[in-house]
Amino acid sequence: MLELKKLYFTIQDDDVDIGAKRNIIDGIDFTFEKGKFYVITGPNGSGKTTLAKLIMGINPISSGSIIFEGKDISSLSITERAKLGIAYSFQQPARFKGITFRDLLAIATGNNDEKKFLEMVTRVGICPLSFLDKEVDARLSGGEIKKIELATTIAANPKLAIYDEPDTGIDLWTIGPMVSLLKKELTPKTTTIVVSHNRAFLDVADVIIIIDKGRIVYSGDLKSALPLLTDLSICTYHNNCERDKDVGCLR
Amino acid sequence: MLDALDKKLLKTVADLEGLPKGAYNIRKNGKLLDRQISANIDIETNADGTGIIVTIKPGTKNESVHIPVILSQAGLFDVVYNSFIIGEGAEVTIVAGCGIHCGTSESEGHAGIHDFQVGKKAKVNYVEKHFAMGEGSGRRTLNPTTKVFLDEGATAEMELTQISGVDEADRLNEATLGPGSLLLITERVLTEGEQRAESTNNIILQGSGSRANMISRSVMKGNSKQIFHANMEARAKCFGHIECDAIIMDNGTNETMPALKALHPDAELTHEASIGKIANDQLTKLMSLGLTYDQAVNRIIQGFLK
View 1 (cartoon, rainbow over the protein chains, first blue to last red):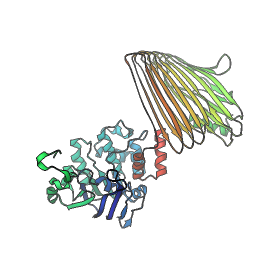
View 2: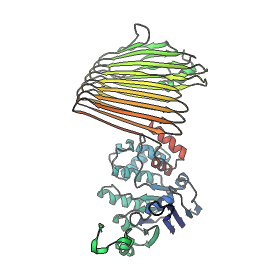
View 3: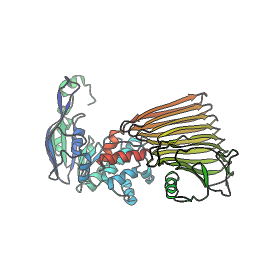
View 4: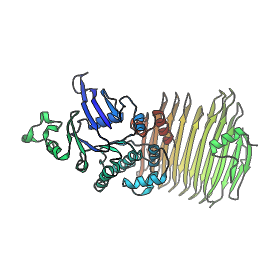
C-alpha cells in the first residue's frame, strides 16, 4: 500500500566543508503491505524520524518517489496526504494557546461527536473525562500531551498511521495497553508504522526495519533482528569506537 | 428606535439581539438612547451630565448590566465618564463595549473612562468589546480607560477585546488591589492594515495577599503596530504575573514591555513574554489533521484570541 522508491533526502552539511552534501536518507527502497505492523528502529541520528516525515510530506524528498495506494504522492502537501488517509503522531507534539483537546479531535474527525470523543479519550488511557476541554498548551505534562497526540492520530481513522516514538513520557503501565491498542485493535484496518526503540513494540511487530546512516540494513522478524540490534555495527560512533578497551558509551 | 445598523453594532459588541434583559443603558452618538434599571441595579446620569453612575446594591447575586455605546454620526468624538459602585458581597456581570460605524470621510471616536469601586468580597465580571465598521474613510478611534479599586477580598475579572476595524486605540488600565483581592485581566487585540494600538497597564498590589494575573494576546496583520506596557508594582506580600504573547503576521510590528517592581520582601512577581510568527509545529500538526495552510493559520489565531 506504500512504496518507497530510491528515496533520498539530502542536506547541506554544516559540520564538514561548507557546501558539502550529506544524504540523511540514502536511497531507500521498501514496500509496506496493507494491514501490517511495522517498527522502524536504529541508532539515534540514523534517519528514522526523517524517513517518517518524508512519508507524511513534512520534509520534501530530494529524489525518488513515494507511491501510496498506487498514486504518486511525492509532490503532494501534508494536507493532501492527510486527506488521502495518512496520519502522523509527532515525537514532540505541538503545544497551542487556546486550542483544546476537543478542538483537535473535531478537526481530526471533521465532526463534533462527543460520545465518540469520550470513547477515544478512555481508550488512550486518559482520565478523567474532563480532559476533553483542557487546552493543549505548555501546562500539560509530557505523557499527557503524547496521549492527546495518539488520540488525534487514531481519531483521524487513517489508512496509514505513523507514530514517532509514541511511548516517550508515557508511564510504564500505559505502554502495554497502548501496544495492544495499536497492534490488535487498529492494525489490520490501519497499516501502522511505529518509530521506536521500545522492546514492547519490537515484540509485536510483523516486520522490523533497522535503519543505519539513512539506509535500511535489515527488514524481517525480531528473532533475526536481535543479533543486529545488539551489534556495534549499527552504532553511530562505530568509526571511532575504542571497543571494550575504553568504553565511553552507556552500552 | 433601534435601526438595523444599531442592531448589528449591538450584536457585535454586546452579543445582544435586541434590548437586553435586566439593567441597561444604551448610548448612541453621545446621547442616552434607552435605560432600564432593576431592583438591585441603579443607573443615573452623573452631576455634570458627562456619563453615568451605576450602583449595585450589596449582596446582589447573578445580575448583569449592559452599557453599550454606538456611534454612527460623522465627525463625532464622544467622551463619557462612567462610575461603577459595586456593593459589598455583590456578584455582577457588566457588559460594556463600543461599536462604531463610519460612513463618511470624517473621523469618529469614543473615549470611555470607567472607574470601578469594588466593595468587600464583591465579584465583578467586566466584558468589553470594541469594534468598528463602515465604508467611510474616516479614522475610527477608541481610547478607553479603566480604573479599578478592589477592596478587601474583592475579585475583578476583566475581558477586554478589540475585534477589528479600529484604526487607532490608546488604552489605559489602572488597578489598585486591596488585601486578599484578586484581579484577572485578559486583553485581546487584533489589528490589521495600517492600524495602531497601544495599551498601558499599571497594576499596584497594595494589600497583603493580593493577586493579579494580566494576560495579553496580540495579533498584528498587514502593516499594523501594537505597543504593550505592563507595569506591576508590589507593595505587600502578594503574587503577580504578566503573560504577553504577540503573533506577527505579514509585516506587523510589536513592542512589548513588561515591568515588575517589588517594594516588599515577600512579593512574588513573574512575567513571560513572547513575540513571533505562528510556530511551525502548530501549523504542521493541524495540516497533518487535514487542514490547509490558510485554515490552520485561521484556527490557530482564532484559538489564540479566544
